Amino acid sequence: MAENKTVLISGYAQAPRGTGMSETMTWIGVVLEIDLNTHVIVAADATFVTDLARDFFRRTVIGYKLTDGLDGLVNLVETRIHTPSKNSLQTALQAAFQRYVEFRQSGKG
Image: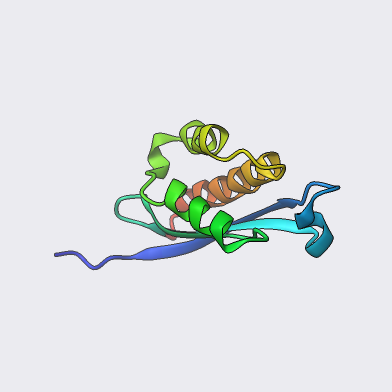
C-alpha cells in the first residue's frame, strides 16, 4: 500500500465586523490537511469562537475531494453553516483552495 502523503494548506479572510469573532480575532483562518494521492481533505480546523463551530466545520469539509472543484466546497458551507462569519469562512476556503491549486501546479506535490 502506498504511503499516505499529505500537505497542510491554509487560507485567511477578515473576520466580519460586529460579531463575537471580530471581538476576539481580526482574521478567520482555515487549515486543511490534504492527501496528495486522493486530493481529499483528511483533517481540518478553523478559527471559530466555539469548539462546537470548529467541530461542525471539520465534519462538514473532511472527506471533500478538492478535484471536485471549489464550487462544491463553498456550497457545503453555504448550505450547512449559517453564522455571521459564513462569508468570511467561504473567502478563507477559497484562499486555501487556490493555494492548493498553486502548490499542485508548482510540481512540488
